[in-house]
Length: 309
Image (tube, rainbow, N blue to C red):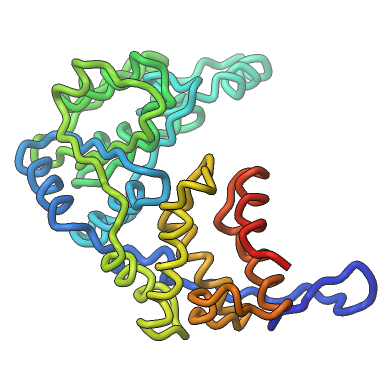
């Protein structure tokens, strides 16, 4: 192992430095399939939100950052849906507690503008509508939100306005500043039919070996194309195995980090094609590396048991 940095006894006491791979989050390196590009263009032409489904780790969220980079629109405005999300949280957050505490200690009544400056913070769709320019809004994992929230999104998009009853204001944007809205779903629950009828839909399939090679090659240095192909073959054998019966299949994100780890371990990818010839140390390294691919205790044990000795 090339980075023996921690041991229970003795060894190095200084925390090792970490070198961040900036290409992991570089939106210019995102490689949308032609069909996904077509779906984006349909959504832009119609001014409708683009709803994306697909396995976690297949690039649904990254698409919003890629489009923002492509059109030079700045960073996307992100709303992460939660089970407790309310419709108003799509647009703004009201610091009710802070307002209450202020009122208890200050007898003067604030004007709407003063209240807004102190206790209202515009986020997501609200920030985009208030903006004087076109922006990308990412509504992530909308299937986690309460069932009525998707329809609230559409109502705001169609009207391009929203109200803030705490200060008695309504904001509306111009048609030319219509936000570009990307919505992701992990299909944990069904979305309302009225919502589905008014969005452009695309399912991102899992990339094939050729696409995976392009993705990983663009993110990781140090391995030749043939070496990366060996990594991908082993990765696909894990995903496609009927014997392993993994509860959570590793996705593209796991493949990228697994490849990075193999490089740090100085593990030769060609050895993945000859598992029965691995040395004891190579087997130990490979079992260690599976902690990047597995996401449950059962899956990790199943993977590690495939490497005997």
